[in-house]
Image (cartoon, rainbow, N blue to C red):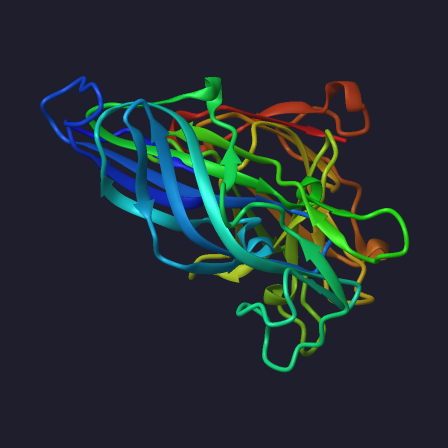
Length: 332
């Protein structure tokens, strides 16, 4: 039997044993916790997690007491597995908590740390100010669970924990120069067999060549949520067939796809970008673009078999996606 999985803004996997809490099955239960970060306009956001625990009717269950130091900004398009296959009693849990020993922010070249001797600081770092992390080493940071509870049954439960850096750190008013951590951390139960992701590919148009020293590996795909938020930038990589960027663990909703090229290099694509895309939960989608060259070389774009792109009202179509999923795309 496949296990329910629990993913947190860091990956945490826990195997749940049918004992202790009220059990729903004679088979063992498992929980996986994944840690993820929403993009944010800071340079680094490093935290040290010393313990992960669940709180149930019979008290706390420690899932991990391994010390993990991570830069949350590296998780904008990735996850960190904090707990993997940990056995715990099946039942209902009301709280998921992270205890932290410290952290630091880097903003505009300045470092703000929980302590001048915080162990996660890079060698030789000069601390410019204070990062306040009230009580997170004692009571811990509480993760907001869907429905304020987590039901762990037979199999594996995966929880994706999203640590929203942009909303979790703020500059203290006044002359202290300090920053304070007021975390916004939410947990979502996901099915790892049904990922919500998007693969974007970029190729060269017929007869198009790149300047000497420039390759498609120097380009990056950019995904921007239309509801507001920071861009997720993923460099293109050669997978042996084409150059592609994969956006992982996405939030369902409307986004915009664009590309970044080498500094000072202007180009156009087919379909033209910015390009609107609606991400559907638990569906994997793919989207292919062709690079035409410089703006002066670009032909009039008319994609064969698609609506007239000159009329935005008609420029919505159904793209081919994997796993028989449906991803609706449109031209901005």
